[in-house]
Image (cartoon, rainbow, N blue to C red; front, side, top):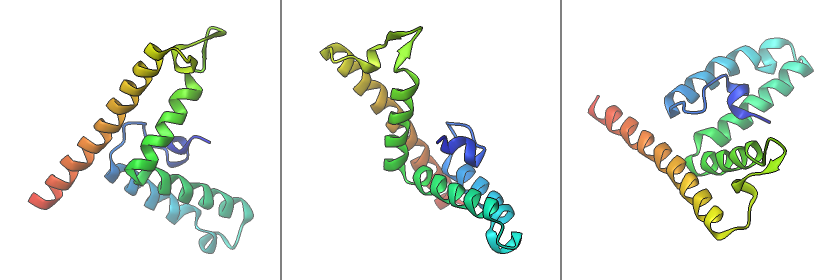
Length: 118
């Protein structure tokens, strides 16, 4: 399940963009506004789950790890270094995960600073 697609945001979306997208979609798909339609209630549940994961930086980093692992499981039918047990591949994976996690944390700190200045 691709949470970014459910919220219709890019993978590098800020926390504010994710929150805004969630609120817009939640207003549209809320079951109370759609006369209890089962399709809209399922969609609302998916949107809520996506927001829960993407709004928490630790859960988002873990989710992004899983997405990367699934995306690079094989390249052209061959195993990639994301799937290898080689110690060098493990270190490269760790560095890629840390870089992504640090970028998310840096964006969140910058947003908080902007909000506190405002």
